[in-house]
Amino acid sequence: MNILELPEWKKQRRRLTMVTCYDAWSAKILNDTGVDMLLVGDSSGMVMHGLEDTIPVTMEMMVPQVAAVHRGAPKKFIVADLPFLAFRSDLKSNLEAVQKLMQAGAQAVKLEGYDQHNHELVAHLAKSGVPVVGHLGLTPQFVHAFGGFRVQGRSDEQRRHILEQARGLEQAGCFAIVLECVPQTLAAEITSTLSIPTIGIGAGLGCDGQVLVLHDLLGFTTGFKPKFVRNYMNGAELMRQAVENFREDVVSGRFPSEKETYE
Ligand code: KIV
Image (cartoon, rainbow, N blue to C red):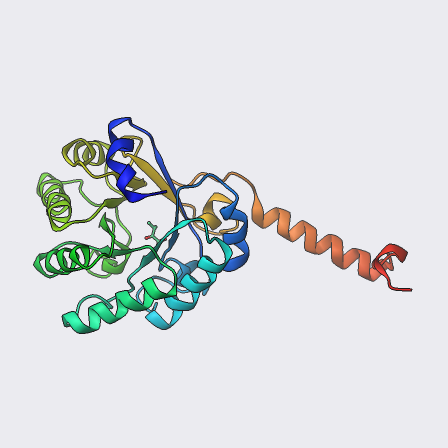
């Protein structure tokens, strides 16, 4: 995928696909799929490390993940999340964080929220050759400010605010915007207002593309399942069954067989 093609994709209503990826082995499998972008999201903190939210995720966690995904999926366009507050201090530190992610193998960075600070940073990055994806709506790094993981943009005031933020991110130079957990009418309005693509998660069919967390898509996530998640397989059950089969074969002496043993 080439980001210069995206305006044409938008005109042709060609839908974009993005999935999260945090490691080389799954990246290797995804490299052979038609999915357009891999997102090394800070959701890795919750999915891979069992954290309650993404707040504790650091650059030290993100950089090796980006490098691993790049090694596994050299053909894919990789977007890397700037973790909590890694882009909210002085310009020099913000650029150092971006530099680490890009030099580890990302082709773009994603940052949550929009205000004057983010506007200036996105504009600076865009001029410096760094493609940037914005992220609005239920931005998980704002979980405490939002009083929990709640759908955003339900009131008229919130709708206006998110629409303004989306316009601001486009003006600043983002090439795409992730819209998370907003009403579908708002996502559709933003999508038709902007000339850059929107990528929805829990934002309905009106977006230009969709993103899902890979482990949700594969059914590896156990416990609470958000309404917007579709499981394309029951990974947790398949994995449990496979490991049980291995255990039973070992206990009963059926593994290893002659064929699996050196002379
Ligand atoms: O970190 C992440 O996985 C994300 C997606 C939910 C869009 O930001």
